[in-house]
Each structure stands twice: as C-alpha cells, then as structure tokens.
Length: 271
Ligand SMILES: [Zn+2]
Image 1 (cartoon, helix red, strand yellow):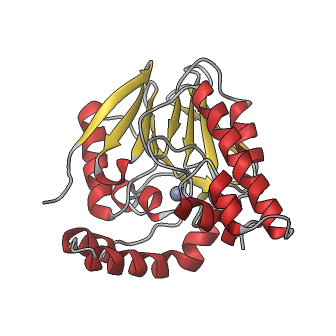
Image 2 (tube, helix red, strand yellow):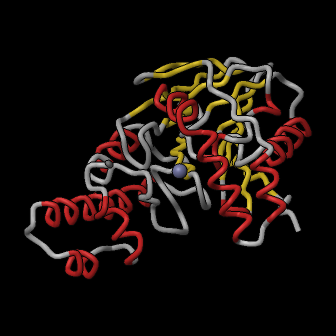
C-alpha cells in the first residue's frame, strides 16, 4: 500500500510543517498574502503531486519552491509544482544535473529490492527538475509580503545544505543538517565541516521552531545538543584519520550507533 498519508502541523503563524510516515519526512509551507513558499517537494513525482494538491487545499496563492538539498527525498517531487521559481543552493543544482539520473536509478533499484515496487516505479518515472534560482551564500525572498532568508553555511550533511529562515515567525527550516528521531545521516556528509554549518543555523534560531528534514519540529536546545554530538563525531574522525585512535575505540566513544559512526569515519573530509 502506498504511504499517502501526511498531516499538517502549524509551528507558527501561517508556517506549517507536513509530516509523512514515509522516511519520517518533514516538508514546509510558509503562507503570506498572495503567495506561499513550499520547502522541499518529497521524493518522486507522485509524492510531489500529493503535496501540491494538499497545499492547494489550504491556499490558492501562487507558490515558490525552495529545496533544502539535493537528496532525492527532498528534491525529486518538484515537477508537479511547475511553472514556478525553484530555489536551491548552487551545489544542489550541480549535483542534480550531474548525478540526479544515476541517483534516481539507484533508489528505484533499492526500493524494488526491498519489495516496494510501487515507490520504485514512481521514482523511476520521475523527471528531475533543476532549480533555476540559485543561492551562493545568502538570498532573500518575499513571499506574499513575508520575508524569507535562505542561507548556506558551508558543507555538512551534504555539499549543498540550504537553511530557510522565516524571521517574522522565528522558524528555521534546517533540512537534514538537523535530524530528529534518527541519527544524522553521514552517507553524503562532510563530518569535519558539519558542526560549523550547524553553528550558522544556531545563529538564526531563537525561541521558535527548528524544523528538521526528518522527524518532528524541535527547539534550539535540541539543536545545541545535536551540534555537540556532531562535533564529537568530527573529533573522532580527526583522531582516527591522524592514526591516534582505532576505529573500534571511536565506535565505542561515539554518541551514535556503530553503522552511523563507521559511515562518518569513512569520509572525514567528505570524499
Ligand atoms: Zn539528506
């Protein structure tokens, strides 16, 4: 059965998060007067179409899309939203252009092997959309009269993590720089640089919600604690890379499970 179900949570005035059981994904909706912003589009065209339809049940205003990073579960659902501006960090476009088709085929294969042919078919049939509005370090948007700031604080969870801040609501969309309910994902990460990217995010976070790419919204305190864990992993990566610590010892000292830690240790500098 397809996981169609999602539910909206209002985290601030006209700032909504839509939560999905599939991958425990969280996407965002910021509504202004006469315009709205969709933060991430889910993992394939069918999922994107579901999200677009649900947004349309709430508002008829024209939308703008922003993609937090190039991973398929955040970026592959964009086509049903077109024509509209699609924002992302410039590395996100480059990654989707270079690797999108290969990534799509690899995930389709993986879902098929896991016995989930429905999602495999949806991913395989997805047309990858390249963002057409690119952010280098920082850009500001006005969405229906509401200011939104998009910032890139360097490499971390991926090479193109864009943080979306809604200052009037005090809400920060963190993408996968922050993860709730599961350890952060290091498969495509830059472990040594990740803590600094979270520092940038923390510079924006106040009393309002921080919305992770997966899991329920969190507060600043959660992010501070996760930053300490990510910094601890960076320290372990440094020690192992320098030959001062064994992998086994790093696994023992890590705040995260063995597979997460080993993934981080395999790519201390990200490549
Ligand atoms: Zn990701």
